Image: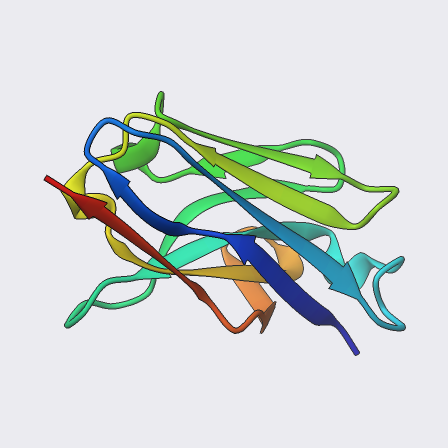
Length: 120
């Protein structure tokens, strides 16, 4: 079993920065079941979409809309993943979910979500 706990998020003005963190715990944290960790987001009325994800080996996958603005990093020893979000835009407003799984494009385990709101 995998439990994901997110922290960070909140309200920021356009152009500002926020940092999201997620820690994984449980019996499967040292296994291939969390080879990939990452962040998806869901805005009102929209489908959940990939923001950024990273494998245990350091391979990354970013949405085109956040490339150059967001940076994902991971601490394998602590089972944590961090998303540094810079140059935030109002369209980045969404609930951000931490996920974990075998591959970056198919995460299986999810956190409870954290709200990110960017005001114009």
